[in-house]
Image (cartoon, rainbow, N blue to C red; front, top):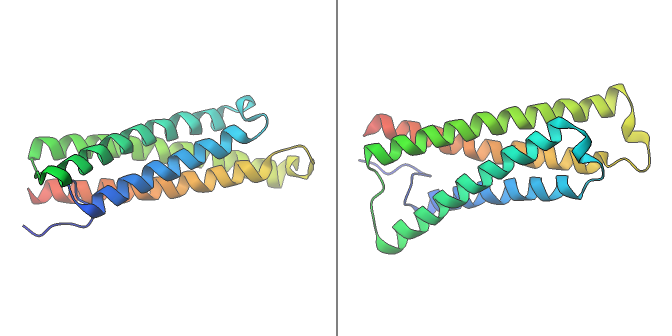
Length: 153
């Protein structure tokens, strides 16, 4: 079977998982540094979702590193099924959180004009949401690769 780019137990899979973890962590870090983020449910949901994605991605990155070090094959149908379910769940949660945060940021910027206030952390909200969308795009890529791999097994 041809090896897919980003499949588990490969260098590309490890880099994909580390990217997911890094962008999720960066999104959390930027959001936590913004003043008053806890007053908005969408931003708290973004932090929770990115935290879950970061933990899931870090766990799978450790598994990829272990498989690379010991030259193990992770293309077991049961294991890949678990990866598919976990990736799809975290991808859906991450996309929902990024979209809800994006909606609140657009509301602040365009409708209620909170971003014109000098003390409001609009730039940090926008950056955190953009990082969340990048993290989601990486987990969506990973979930599609896993689904394709499961179909090929």
